[in-house]
Structures are given as C-alpha cells and as structure tokens.
Image (cartoon, rainbow, N blue to C red; front, top):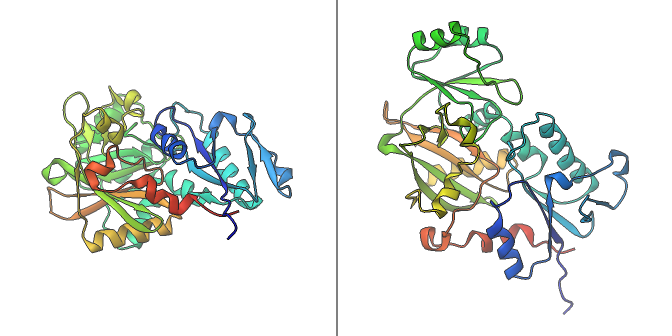
Length: 335
C-alpha cells in the first residue's frame, strides 16, 4: 500500500506565545508544518492563476501541497491599524480562490469582526441573546438608550478581550458622560452596540467548544473580581482604567498561570446543538460559543462567538481530552 502524503500545515498566527502548545504538538508528532506570522504575509492579486505563493519568510503556500490553519484573532495582538482587518480578510479569501484549503477561512474571520453579526446568527439558531442596538454615533446612542433596560453596556462592534466596553447603570450616568465630553471608543470599524447587561448567576459564564462540527468540551469560566472589573457578557475587562492592557488578558492563558479556577462543564444537548449550528453558520471549523444564566430573570443568554478559540491548558487533566489529537481530523489532509 502506498504511503499517504499529507499536505503541509501552514499556521497563520499573530500572538507570540498563544500557540506554543500547538507548535510543540506538531513537532512532537513530526507533522510537516510551517509558521507564517502576519508580518510575513505577502501576495499579489494578479497571481490567483498560479499554483503557489511565497511569504516574506520564505514559506511557500501551495494549492496542491498546503493546508492553511488560520489562528489570527479578529483583533490581533498589538495591531491597532483598522486597515489590517480587511487586508487580512482579503488575504484569506485570496487563498481560497487560489484553491488552498483554509481552516477557519474568510467567512469565519468576518464573523469574528462583528458582534452584531454574531448575535444575528446566534438568534437565527435558536439562542436567546441580550437585547441590543447597533449605533454609529453619540447621537444614535442617546436615541437608543430609551429602548433598553439599564444597566446597559456599550461595546465596540469589532473588538476583543473587553477593550472599550463601558457600563452605564442609569440613563443619567450615561448622559452625564456625554455632557462631560467623554470619548466613546467605537472601535476599529466605527460601529458600536448598546446591550442590556445581565449579571451572571453564580458569578460564572459557560463556554462550549466545537471542533470539526462535533462537541469538544465545555467549561465553567468564573468572572474575576479584583484588579479587573470583568464584564460577564464578554468574560473580559470593562474597567476603562485597565482596558489598554485587556487585550493581553486571555482567560485560558491565565489558567496556565493558575489564576483562574476553570472547571469542566457538561452542556445540555440543546446547548451543544445551538453551538454546533451557530458555528456551522459562521463557517467556523473550530471555535466556541459562550453564554450566561441571568441573575435577573434566570434565562440563558448567548453573548459571544469565538472563531479564534485557544484550547484550554492542561486539557487532558481538566476535560479528559486532548484537543490537539482531535485537531488532526481537520489538518491532516492527503495531497
């Protein structure tokens, strides 16, 4: 029997340390792979009829021999230029048009760029989401305040790790900030959302991980108090005094340092089904969906779709599975 020759796995990434475990696993398993940092991307749109392209670091991405694993966040680490977002999305689409298989491709990346789009897809798939309004100016914020029940969160439509999130307890509090000239951080695409805030029952949120359209594991993620004032609806920091550093506060990364007491969660069949259908509609080959149980009314509210979902550290001990072994079903593709 002829030996099966697999495509080289080309990992697109941007964070310097988030994927150390992934690279270590690929090396340990002797899986042919290459790394391309976002700063090494180079392509020519008039070469889509070619069979391969060469990145700045010399890595070749081939239509016939490569598989691209997209591990770039919708809000990349330390990249604040809005132009990067359409640039990178177009690059992923270019690879797809070239005929290169891409795990979590351009459509998945587009969902990561828009919380408004995430909520629409979640609701389409039977998930209850917090009541929200899309806004593009301070005037639209003022007009929309009367449509929602306080407390209210303001969120940049394109954002991550809680950066730019503001919480208002009352309308007077919100209008006082406007009259005081407070800058509202609309984010990289100039769009924001107003959203009803639900304090999570039990002080935790729930995360359901899906890989290759199958349930991978579930987690209970506590909401942290102390130096950061975390918004449960994003599992992230909404303390504006700290928000500049919030981009680096990955809950799963802190687990490795022992800062978070993550516990496994066995989601209901309905929660798994909603998560699977949502990620399928998002064209996400791997990712996660998060929800909370509201202290206010006891309802489940889904609030986040993560096309870039870092696997939890010490997964074997915590959730009794090795997600990297499961990842092989996606990335080991014969030439």
